[in-house]
Figure 1 (cartoon, rainbow, N blue to C red):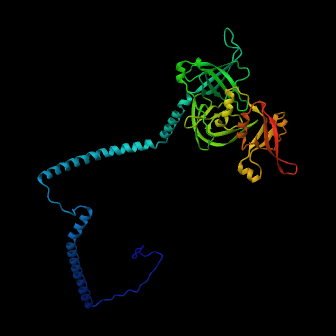
Figure 2 (figure 1 turned 120 degrees about the vertical axis):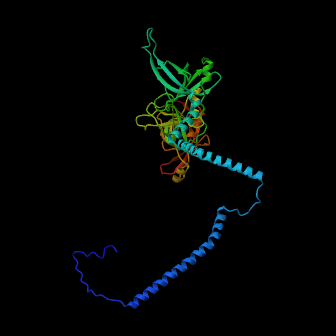
Length: 442
């Protein structure tokens, strides 16, 4: 198959016996007759096959045409002359329309393809998302203000003896006589005057209500009478969210100076809600986002409704460069106290909430585990110890630090509280103890 049998390799030597065999003439005649018979038989069968094909072809062609719709299954009566004229006109119109459609079809297809590319363009989608973010943030941004604090006194020639401090805040409340501003900026003790710059660049004198040392938050107020009509129209009042249910993956928008530059608008999602800041008689939830921040981060977080859900916590060198914020829902009672210049209620207890599942697994009471007690505090004076578990205040069950703090801050200064405590005895048994503690102010 692969080699030419007439070519002999040089390294091989074949020897054959050569003989000549002559066939008789009778054998030649026999082969000739057999070949002639095969030829005429093939011609005969070929003619038969051609005749059969010619006979069956019309039938097959008609059936094939019916299946393809080329031949009508039902024949209608012939149309009149008027109908024929209308039919010809329709054919002409359809033909022209088809030609126009073919021309336009390519253009429409190109436009559709171009439109599809624009719709699936990730940059276009990003732009659309950011525009929606700006729409949500439009009203709260009008509530943003800049705060300038001055200390010292000015010279007759210049202001060289004055020192300046700057902060940012947001208008969260308006009454008939005042507007209130929440800020995560704490004026120094040397600050002698405060000035607020509004969204329309107008200014007014501000007054400090109160500052919370634990969170670094402050509340200030400005007289409505000092604002012009144009300023009143230019500013807005941001709403504080009521819900505690800020969850992971919830979208949030950071406004203010989240990355250090004023009037920024950044967006992202909440990545964690497990952060906690423990303080005397309080525990604050910290939300962590995927929004990049810095040590100078200021401002608030708003939800997709434009409500304030968090106040940005200033980062320290030990923090990661992402925005973290105090949950506004937990700060509402404290903000109300600061707005009314109401002193913080104080017992001096640092506690940790005990989840129900944890309490069941350890066989202990659900409540607040006391991790630390301030020295010389009302709690220490009442005999409250580290390791105690607060289960109730004045007979009202306490499930976590939020309930404990809310109950305490609603008490009056000097009020005595009956505290129900679970305490381990010397032999390791858990018993119930009731102590009376007197509320003080911080």
